[in-house]
Structures are given as C-alpha cells and as structure tokens.
Image (tube, one colour):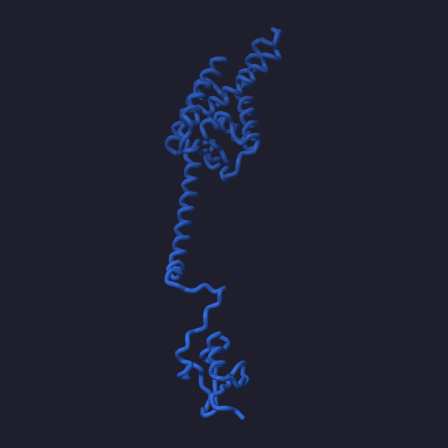
Length: 267
C-alpha cells in the first residue's frame, strides 16, 4: 500500500519510486533529476513538474561539475577581452613583419651599389692579374702586345664571371655583404650561378658598356640617373630585385672604401 508523502518520479519515460521527501530532495540537489522532471504522489490529480511543487521550488540548483569552470564576472570579461587582445597581438605581429619586410627591401642608393660593385670587380681583377702574372712569369714573349691587349679585353668579363661564381656559391659577394645589399630574382628567390651569370651579362653590356673608355662612363651615368629616378636599373628592371638594410655598419663602409682605393692602386 502506497503511503501518503512518498513520491514517484518520471525517469526515461518510466515511473520510478517510491521515495520519501528527503530522497526526492536529494535527487534534485544532486542533479540526478531536473526541476522539469514530472513527480506524483497520492492525493495529486495529475503529474506535475518538481519546480511546481512548493516544497521543492526553492531548492538551490545542483553544484557545478568540478570539470566545468564556475562562471564569474571576471570570466565574462575575459571571454570578451581575450579575442580582442589576441586580435591586437596578431595585428602587432603583422605590423612588425611588415616593418621587417620594409627593412629588408629598402632600395640602396646608387653610390652604395657603386662602391659595392667597384670593390667586388676590383678584388676579382686583382686576383686575375696575380694569376696572369704567375703564369707568364719569366716568359717575356708572353708579354707581347697582343697578349696584353687580350688580357685587357678579357679582364672585365672574367671578373664578372668570378663575381657570378661567388654569388652562386654564397648568395652574395664581399662588397654587397659589407654594405648589406641583396640581389634576388623577381619572385624573391636567391640567385643561382646561372642567374648570376645572366644578370652579369646584362651588367656587362647595359651597365658597363663592355668597359669601352668614355662609353662606359656614359653608360654608368645613365644607370645612375635611372636608379635615382626610377629606383631600378635597366638590366634589373622586371628581372631582379636589389634590396638592402636601412642601416649598415659605418666601419664596414670605411673598410670597403679603403679596399677600393687600395685594390685599384695595385692594378
């Protein structure tokens, strides 16, 4: 016989019980039953939700699971501000990356490029001269006018070949490294030996006019003017990108200038 005060409750579509007041209260407090669960006891005409029963309506909600963080005002603030902070950090990172790109892609001045190339070609020419002198030592016949003329004609192309070889091996030359100058292909890739040879062929004809006296000065003056106005030489335009750091070591520049003077005093 069912006693007055004992409760039946609905669980998974099945009437379960009976339990006394304290038993049902415990089920509600632990969260095993929700406040919407249907309950019934003798004397009630129909099933009702536990929340509709006066003695259960003011029970506190079940304690939160320890794995579930308790929401606080600080939690709400963090959820609102965290995405904003992350977005600001991401924007700052992008700006820093952009600035680093600008530093790496600054256009070097014409004089900066001139000193770097002059040093590199002077160093290569000195090396070639030493090798030539060593080969023909004590052979005065080899010092005939035709041989000397051929040496003079081949000196500049050979120096540019050595320049390309060094670029292909190390990605730069001594003069460019001292003045923080980089040469890349138009797609941003470093120059291979073949690329460096191709570029130096353009330099030989368009930039240095094969070393022909007076004409080479006019050619270099034209490239100097073009670089000043259009920020690119004719032999680099659309093919190569010449960039440099915004700052370079003054000591390195001084060493390079002294090296240029010293090298050409030996030639």
